[in-house]
Structure formats: structure tokens, C-alpha cells
Image (cartoon, rainbow, N blue to C red; front, side):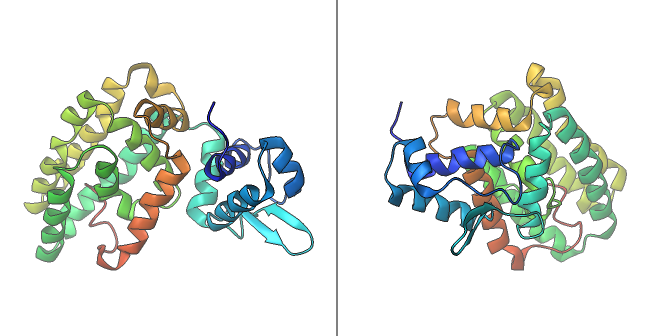
Length: 257
């Protein structure tokens, strides 16, 4: 087994929080105890705690120690996403939610999209279609405007999908079908395209469709030999989205693809 480093230590503590073994307001063990637990020096523990604090999972209270942040203090998408992940949301459950949200968003976009909106969607699809692997996850415009509560789960599930050539081959053409429906102002066709796009997982995931989104994403990363944790992937995608927010369309226009 590889020697612990700050990232793996932070991931282990993060897993305890996600699993509910550490609750909001709980005090973490002292640095000395954590150093013994992981078999490392205290500087490495401090580095791991700093990364957890940057993620909004832990707060340091001078003279008192390190505590799991309360729901009121951490970011909405992190806390709601974490609460959902604790419940072990499956791919099937997330797909149902996404179909409801995104098919309606596509229909609204077909009714309301302006020429400028269409041009932006064209540009987004041009970036998306040639992308592969994790770059495809970062390029998919659905992440840009997805509701905060399920954005982390959506990123996690896409991590599984981009590693499955059958899913990608079947699902990706529907992006353009949806865009063409939006372009010609056809809400029913736009909704149908998104429903078909998101329905591919139910057809091709097999037993994975009933497994937790968390477990699917972690396995996908392991199969690719990635040293990046799931939380790092989610945080990286959402941070990139936030950095580009000034160029993202308001309301529903960018959501359908």
C-alpha cells in the first residue's frame, strides 16, 4: 500500500464526513492523534486539514481545534450534495431527477432561446463533441447551470459514463438532436431528445443502474488508474464552472445539453 500523503489523509477524513461517521459540529481528533493514526508527521496532517478547510468541510477554531463545519457555514452545493451522497443515491434515482429537470429545461430553451443563446449553445457543443474522458465531464454545459443540489452527483455519474464507450456512443448524438430542436423552436422534440439522452444509462448500465453514484464514480477513477479523488474531480469541475459563470447564460438556456 502506498504511503499516506496529505491528499489521501484528507480523503479519508472526507469519507468519514460523507459517511456520517463525523457529524456537523464534531471536533476532529487532535493533530497528534491523527498523526499516530495515519503514521505520518504533524506537518502532513496540517496540510490535509488546510485542504479540508479550503473545501469547506472543516473549520479551525483557535484554541479549540478543528471541527466539521455546520450546514449553515459550508457551501450549499457541498452540503446538500454531501447529504444526498450519505443516503447512497443510485444512478437510477439521479437519472429520474435529471430527466425531470433537464427535459423541461430543454423545452423552455426551445420556447425562449434567442439567436445569441443559440450561438452560445453551438459554441458549447463544439467544445463538447471532440472532448474525451474527464475533459468531456468538464466540457459538458449541463454542469454549468445544473441545480446546485445535484451538480456534484451529476459530475460523479458522468465520471462513470465517460469510461463506457457504449454509453458515450449512444448518448452523445442526442446533444445535437436537442440543440437542433431548440434551434427550430420545437419544445416537445427538445424534451424527447434529453429524455432519450439520459435514458441510455438505464438501458446500458446493467446492475450499475441500482448502485450508488459514489461507488460508480470511485470505481471508474480506479479503473483509469487516476490518483485524483472523486471530491477533487467534483470540486475541480464546479470551480471551473464558477470561474466561467460570467459567460454562462441565465435561467434555463444552457441547461439542456
